[in-house]
Amino acid sequence: MSINDPRNPSASAAPLALYVHWPFCVSKCPYCDFNSHVRDRIDTDAWRAALLADMAHEATLTAGRPLSSIFFGGGTPSLMPPALVADLIAAADGHWGLAPGVEITLEANPNSVEAARFADLAAAGVNRVSLGLQALDNEALHFLGRAHDVDEGLAALDTAQQVFDRISFDLIYARPGQSEADWQAELARALAFGTDHLSLYQLTIEPGTRFATLVAQGKLTPADPDHGATLYELTQAMTGKAGIPAYEISNHARAGQESRHNLTYWRYGDYIGIGPGAHGRRTGKATLRHKKPENWMSAVTRNRHGTQSEQPLTGEDRAREALLMGLRLTEGVDLDRIAALSGISVPHLVDERTIDQLIDIGLLHRRDARLQVSAAGMLLLDAILPEIVTV
Image 1 (cartoon, rainbow, N blue to C red):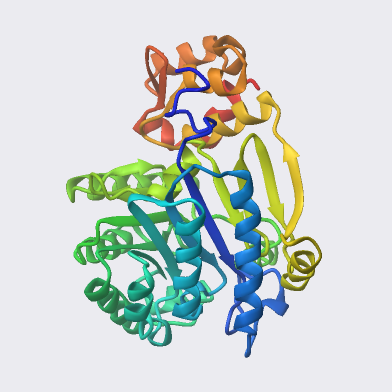
Image 2: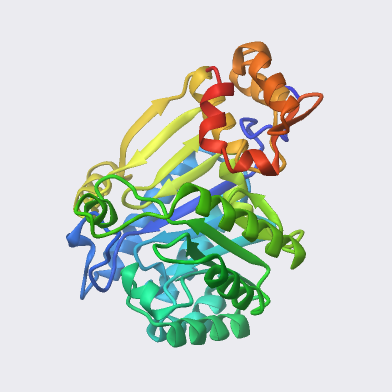
C-alpha cells in the first residue's frame, strides 16, 4: 500500500474521526483530575460558541475528508444539552460531511438522571451509547467509587436498549477478592442482556490513584497475576461462545458491531480532538488542547481554537504508535502499511529474530506482512511489545 492509497489513514481523502471532550461532571468524580470540572451551572451559549470555533479551526486543516465517527466523551457528556449535541453534529456535517452509516457515540453514566435524556439525545443524532456500568455488584461499585447501584445501572441499560440501536457497556474484573466463580456468574449475567458490544477491563493499579495509595498502605491486595490470567482466559471462552469474541485485547463485539471510532485509533487513522484536554492525530501531527476548562476557553477567545500544542510526528513516532496500537487488535497490523506511512523499512520496525522465536512458541502469528499477537500472546502483550518493536 502506498502512502497515497486512500486506505492509508495519512492520505488526504481518508475519512476522519471526531472526538468532542465535554469536561464537566455534576458531582466529584474519583477519576477527575480537576475539582474545577464539577459545575452546578454552565454557560451553554458560551460553550457552544467555543466548541464550534474549535471545530471550525480543525475543519480548515482537514477539508474534503468525511467523518466516519463522532464520539462525545469526557466528564458527563450525557448531561450536555441535547440541542448542543445536535448543533455540534450539524456543524460537523457542514464542515466535513458525514460518511454513510456514520457512528455517533456518547458516553453515559448509568443513572436515572442521565437515562431520562436518552430519547432527546437520540433525536439529536446520537446512534450509539457507551454505558459505564463497571460492575454488577453493589459492594464492587462502592469500591470502584461509582455513584450508581446495580438496579439503577440496569434500569439505565434497559432505557438505552429501548432508545438506541447500538449499545456497549463496560465491566471491570480481577477485583480484590473476586473468585473465578464470581466473575463467571457476573459475566454470564452481562452476556444475557444481549448487547452487541462489551468492554471488559482488568483492574489495574495506576500510580497516583486512590487504589495505589491503598496498596501502599496495605489496605488493598491486587489480584494475583496468575488469577488474572485465569479470569482473562475465562472471559475469552465465554464471550467467544456467546458470539461476541475479542477484536481488541479488552473489547468484544458481534461481527460488524465493533466500535468504528476506536478502530480509527487502533488502526492509526487520523482523528480530530476538540474541547478541553482533547488529543488528536491528523496530517502527521499530534495535537493537544488545553486541559483546564478555563485555560481552554481563554485560548479559544484569543486564537479561535483551544490548541495548547501541535507537534510534528517523526517517522519513528508514527511507526511506534501504529505498532503499539495495532498489535492490541486481534487482526494485528500490516507491516508494509506502517512502513509506507512512516518511511521506515520493515526490518527497522521490528525485531525479526525475536518475532520468529515468539512464532515458534505460539505467541505471534505472521502471514506475509500481517503480524498478529495470538490469543495466548495477548496475556503477555505488555512484555511482548517492547521485545519486538524496535523504533
